[in-house]
Each structure stands twice: as structure tokens, then as C-alpha cells.
Amino acid sequence: MIYAQIMAGGIGKRMGNTLLPKQFLMLGNKPMIVHTVEKFVLNDEFDLILVSAPEAWIEYTNEIFAKYNVSDERIRVIAGGAERNDTLQNAILFIEKTNGLHEEDVIVAHDAVRPFITKRIIDENIAALQEYKAVDTVVPAYDTIVQGNGKEVVNIPVRDEMFQGQTPQSFNIKTFQESYAKLSEEQKKVLSDSCKIVLLAGEKVGMVNGDHSNIKVTTPYDLKIANAIIDTGH
Image (cartoon, rainbow, N blue to C red; front, side, top):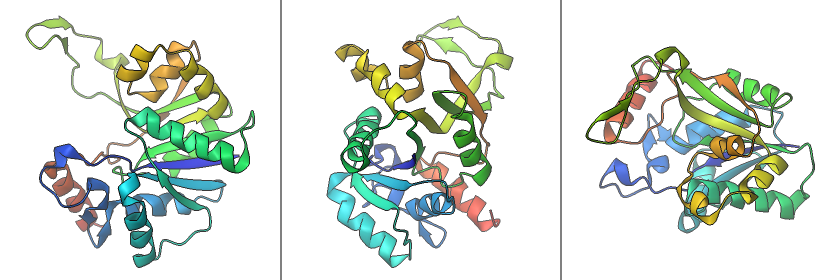
């Protein structure tokens, strides 16, 4: 089966003093999370669309979907986790309890605060999972990447080999579980990037071209840019 996961488990501390977690903030005429979920509802390939929200905000999430007519029998609002990989694990546990886990099961995990995800990116993630056990969505790094320790430059990698990660990140579920099980407890605490977990286990990770419009809304400035995109008729 093919599962979608909308990661809305955070509270958005970098957004500043807001009454709502950032995924519920208004973008144009509806909350950001609604824009994102609508993109996945349009795709018929998903068997379930899991929306991982903070546990205290699950009821509110369902209310938002009802208010903005986000109705699809595939949607399930479930609890997220303390960290990104905990949220992914919670989704996998829900899948296991609901449908069991099978060798061919895959999950396409996307940030709720990347509301400009395109059909092409989603389709190419699903297609790439036929060849790879894990897939990362990336865009070329236009600026030179400088590696440093906060005080001095340590390395300046070749820019043509550098990419910026976006989401979705997509996985064969069993491969992800097996890779995660190989991590030490220390690694589990510091590894926030799910694709790196699979990479460390020795699996190849495919790349799908993202889009520079597929921005992550993290700060008030990002929200202004996102609203400007909406105003131009994205």
C-alpha cells in the first residue's frame, strides 16, 4: 500500500508569539495545513492520508478540516511525537495496527508547513520508490555551502555537488524500520533527518527534484513570503 503522512506534529517555536502552532496559521483564506492536505487528497494513489498533529490539537485539526470542507475517507488525524522520527514511527505504528505491515508498503512523508508541494513532486516520489528504498526531495544549492564550527571555516564543498533537502521524504516502511533499529540510542537522539537513517544503514537513497517554491514556512518572514505567493495566484 501507499501511505501519505502530513507531518504537523510541531508547535513552531521559531514562529514567535502566536496563539496557534504554525501549521494552523492562516495562509490566504484558509489555514496552512488545509492547503497542504488538499494537495495530497487530489492524489488517488494513496490508500490512507495520515495527518500527524500534536496530541492536544487533534480535535482542533478535525474541526479545521470540517470547517474548510476537507472531507476524504482516507484521512486519519493521529498523534505526532516529540521529534520528527518519533512522529514517523507513530504513523508506522498506526499503519501496523490498522492494516499490518507488508514488504511493499511505502510512506510519503511531507511537512505540513510546505503548502506549495506540487503533484509532480508527489508523483515522482512514488515512482522513485519502485527503484529505491528511500527517496529524498532536493533542490540544487545556489549559494556556496560553507562548513564551519561557528568560529572558523572548516571546509567549502564543491557547490555542484551540494543540494538542499526538502520534503517529501519517502520510504519503504520495513526498510526504514530495519534501519532505525540499527541506530544506537545516542544516534536516535541527534539524527533528525530520516533519509540519513537509511543511508547509514547502507541503503541507497534516490533523489527527486524539488522546487524552490516548495518552501518551508518556519518564521514570520517565511509566512509573509508564502502569503505573497498566494496573492500572486500560485
